[in-house]
Image (cartoon, rainbow, N blue to C red):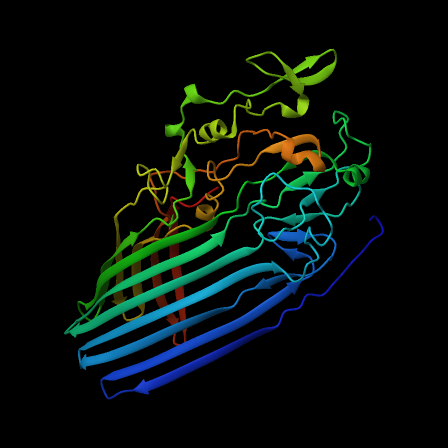
Length: 460
């Protein structure tokens, strides 16, 4: 492997068709519609983010077709009253699949059975050869990957001119539907690393693999597909008022209802320290050194176990482990915890103000202020799907591939993610002051102070 170099080009055919129609129905009604359809396929020699490898065994297909459709209907009701209605929808799809059977375990004659059978494609495991320089690897997590994102947007704005006032009001509706496969290793990970504590160690990772002797093996019991849903509902009123020749005011308010994104299948959970019960905490194998050898100690019985098990949960059955994993977890399917794992904040109020004042013939002063709200991005929500107890992932130490089914795995405290249940959404305050001054006949000078402050911003 040290002298092996490779460079393979990817295939990326792409086609985009755009269709548009405009129709002036009459003097008062105008309509247009636009539809875009995209076909996009990539065959990537070194895989994708959830299915990659460092040797181009065979391409991994990444398909991301999509479409979008928008319709606009503008109505001039009378010379001082107009209405604009917009309806749109879009969908993008992400699919990741092997292009052939190169990675099929059956084709390669691998007869050993993993602890769980959730791998739909029967792919090879994620093999690791610790101690071998520049060793090849395979890494399939959540393969085949399925993702689609469908949105529906509806906007209606009405504008009315009344003397010195130009008033506007409107509503915006946004519906999001997104399904996505969780990034879990359902095909399993196997480490053939050298380990002097492993009775089957042969002193070299490749020979360990040939004999089927692994240092450790881990597999998720299932792969889940999240069904994420949410609504954004917003409406506003505003007025542009020319008070006099020198002063113009823009003022209004926007209202937001930002529904927390939730998994319609209610599979997600979130760690909440307020729910953690110290009295129900797990008992862990403790470290010890006996006769110069590092070992693990069962704190209840005092029995010694291999050092690799230090930090694992005392094995009292998988069901009990699930209970331990759920300690401190807010479950979306519990009926007592928000299905979106955060509280809905109800209506958010966002006032806006703009002032333009002509100090004299050569000088104009402008002042503005506004509050803006937004939902945080979806990835942290999607990351809640593999949280316990939705999936479990036992680890098996010092075994042989032919006897995995007869082995008993160990469970370690899980990595978990959590949301602040209060559910504050990202908020931005913006303000500015600008002075414009004509200093020459064809030259103007502008000096501005522009500021913004963000609160409740996303951090992980």
